[in-house]
Image 1 (cartoon, rainbow, N blue to C red):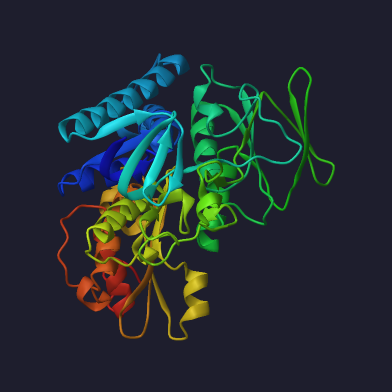
Image 2: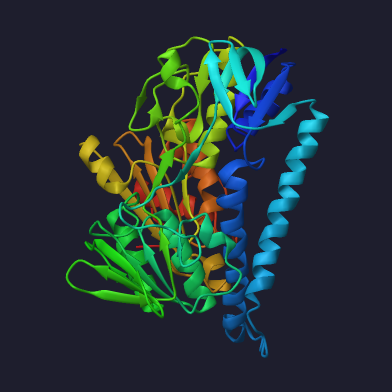
Length: 453
């Protein structure tokens, strides 16, 4: 029997970050992974999708180059090469984590783990003893009852990343973040894209204004969007036929099912220890501890947004709590990032949520159209919205526009440390930069707009 200070089940952005963080604090750590190091984010999520989207963004710039005085002709899309680059990026980053593990003397065991006691984990028949255990088993794509994904023609978000040829057309079932990112990708690469969304709008995690604007942008680019529509069946003939409510039929070469994710909490021994779950997620306290004192759970298998950076936050918080440095989790400062074109990012409450919770809410909005940097980049579409109360406290920030997912970092910092919007207006930003939109929006909030009326 091998003994460790900490055994972590799962090596995604929650598990591997927790392992590295714990090793820096002199804990003897073992990570158990039944699949690929790096979990969903690195192998089947954040990294490969953004690698593909970056290739699509290069293509968009080439197509628009004449507007910038550059005439680029004769280019072609080599999708197998795009896919190969995506794989190379993933492999390189995975190798980087392996190097970090070796340098940090973290033991990596391959196999399916099962928690068999408060301080005991079974892996491939071997028993590991641990003073503390972190469950970081992540999540997987959710399926639709009666619709079987063969990962060739009808794909989940995992399977769609394995295709080597660009489909001429694709039906995307689910207009959430994942669906919209893939819609943006395939539309940019020239595929005919259809979105089928059960709710009355796409991107329901964002404000209605952002949702409507993204829908308008997609439609302008030729994406066909069916909201308040339910997928009833998919049949295979020469192509796929997606029958949706209302009698409509969508014909496409491939289909992507992106209707959410479900936590991986089955078969890891929870029931035998009396660890409770709710809707598949492990119940934890405000310190990420389960009902068994020595066992913690983090990331997609507990409450909160299903985001890689949230999982990493959880992982470090759990390690601090294991070491006796009490940290209470708070997801109010976790940003949402949507890598469409244009990007969408937010932190805190949306406009609608803010109005419901705060009676004295005020919304300040500044358009990219009034940003010098946005114009010289040829990206004047979009806006920033700051929601604040009468005292100037930040309630939420939402950005639609170029580099929104990078820009949101400033808003997260401002909200997290409690910067008053009135003080934000006085913070000097470089010119010309996109970050000036924060100062401009803060001035709008204060009633002293500079580059807007």
